[in-house]
Length: 574
Image (cartoon, rainbow, N blue to C red; front, side, top):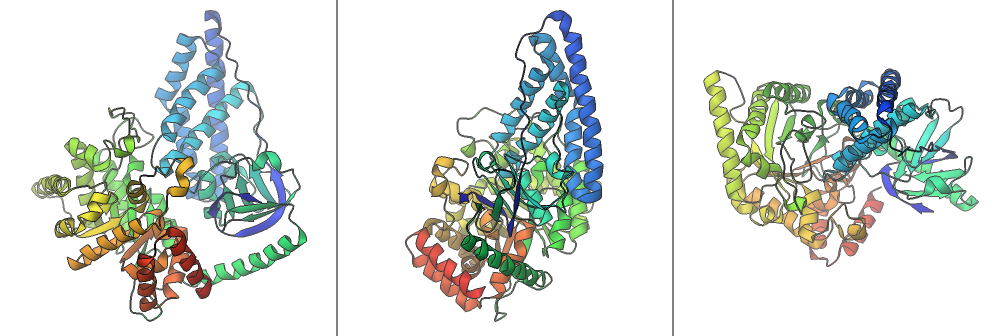
């Protein structure tokens, strides 16, 4: 049995298809001056061939996977057309006298490292996209054939070191029943694509691609994050039964899409919303029954470009989401970048501890013009839907007041210009720093709502870097200290007549749903595909049951004890 990360739910049994990696040998020998034109020509030919291939792949992806899933190739093609990227490689060939493939490798590695060092898990995983483009260019420069999953003629489970966007776009999706990869996390491209295709996936398995032989019988359990290779008859029978049970469960979940997330006794109703990164994510949110957007991560507008997005571009992006969701609410988080999330067009300091550094609201308050441009765009978009503004990384009342002062300046400017906006637009903060959770009663007087960002709140409360594999076991959402901070925030907001939501990963965990419901959370925002599972849990409990579960959890002394109780609750309501 191999233990990995449960990336996409479901159970599948089938034959292994092992995707082999082509061996790439980079020639590190220095070239002579007279060889420079030929090397630049090799590089330019590699770019041209890569562009031609990617355009065909994008067209195929649009036909078979839909426009949204094909859009990732726009970003890939943009890399090939990026003059800074192209010139940097040309200059490296000229000035450092390196081969075309070596120049591409070095420049791509620089950008991959930059993205891998980012804190945001979604942005971190985008390093794989850049690496994918780079490997394609190098293979085309070297004349190495690029393997494709397009020609599969039987149902298979794909086993690979990792799957690139190009791999998944070209694959015969009728034949691929599951993924199992050495690398990746819950926000990697493989995981996102598997959830989009609604097929099981387990990632982060270490070395499974080296140990599985093509044709081996494999079980992929995307619910528990485990993979079995050539299982015995008893395990095979057990998983055949589990697969049938899971298929019935999924059919039941589909029936819940348009039903409210209310308790069995109708005493409590919770709003279930979706987290999104771009306007194209709205479709998936609506298809999964989202009642709103609880977190619109605006930083994606600022990435993969050479300059800041202007007010008009931002306005159009926010307006598009507001109109698509109207009258449902859309909570737009202001720019959460800085520290280890670098933008090439902004001068940012090198920091010893970027997790505690110059980022998010801190960076915005020090760049009021940049901040005001975004606030003006959000305000203008609020005229077209039910938009709310949310500030990230607030740690004190003074930060909140300074942010609101800039917001008021933006409102005054728009009034003078005669540009309409929602005068009653709600303004809230993300509670992701322990200091904000502790003084929630003070902050509640000057906000309209709180949204608890558990990803950071947990790591800051427990002093655990959630990206550090050596201490990953200490990153514990069910730690009593975390639960007590969550309760404090909810109680403080309700006492002040305000509401509290949650937009971290914990919000989409069905195991956490009974406690969060019982603590009195008003809204939960999550990956769209998690909505139906959380809704099922909420609709299976009475409000009194949920409150009793939450109270018991608050009295328990360890995360293990709390999780054991919650597992029993979920087993009883299945």
